Length: 275
Image (cartoon, rainbow, N blue to C red; front, side, top):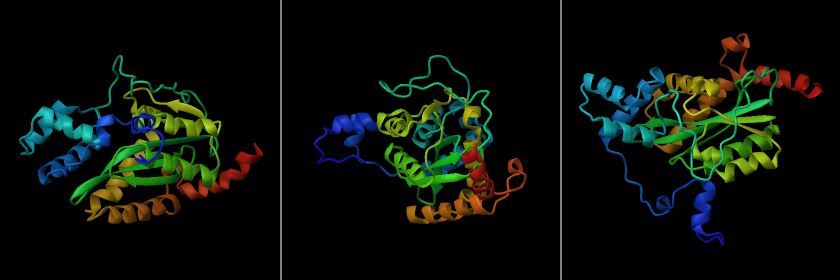
């Protein structure tokens, strides 16, 4: 999304997208085979034990025969965009200058589609590399409204997914995210404001605030990603696309009385509009 020939200075473009100036000139270095293996295992352990920090993950990896230090585990966790989940003090600063919005869903009865949407980013391992997946979900029906894959955790692919969902399904009343810089940057929040959408953000480290998206990641990884070693980004996009179509149209959900997200979403829309 950075345009080097644009009249807006690069530093201002980076600020709007929540990027550091150094990232504009950084040439990515491919991860080693060992790091890719460690990251895949860290991802699995994080899904199973979201409270485990770098020290505990190091201990698990050491016991499994991978001699790795805490600092290296912490570096890989930052690259993957994951962190241990626990309450902390003075940690609600996702990016200097980016405002943090209050969490609006506590105690709210969510009773119809397009009342609340949510989004998040997750790490997707491949055979020789990794990508990131962002998805926009309708909370009431668990339907995935839009998604994108990227090889970097910038805001542009998150904005593209948001704009697609808005173009196809209209605007929700509330949009919930975590406090990541991709979602607090002006380029993202201004899209929400332009559509008069109330902005809600999770408390720092509070996975329960966005629990439905976290459950989605677990389903995608155990039912699709971990069963395939994608050889390329295009293969990852194709596999994820097939699974998301299955998830929306064919996979029954216990929380939806064994119906699919598509069935509940489209059956409920006339009632929501009437209300």
